[in-house]
Image (cartoon, rainbow, N blue to C red; front, top):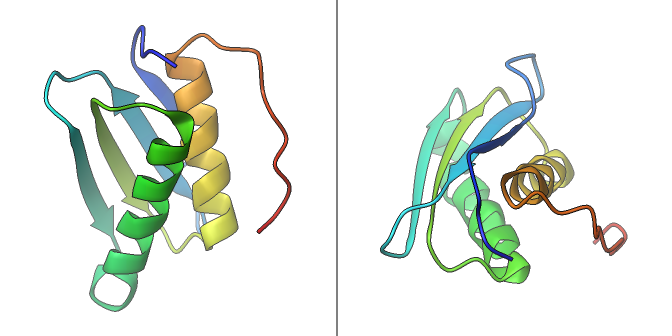
Length: 97
């Protein structure tokens, strides 16, 4: 997939995460602001990176504002932001891991 414009998904509500994805020219850059960053920051970044890798995107800036979201919510928000940024409606259901 190719990023065509900025894509967002999620909210600033409790137990959610707001994810913004935009195109850059050099790799993947993940910026995280989380109320639980000290405990779970590495795990959140890992989930975000995995989702971006699985989407086939090689150059993107991902900004995430986390309010205690579970991994399944993070995956859903990142995937949705990617599809919105790419103007894609060819969603492939993968199920819950």
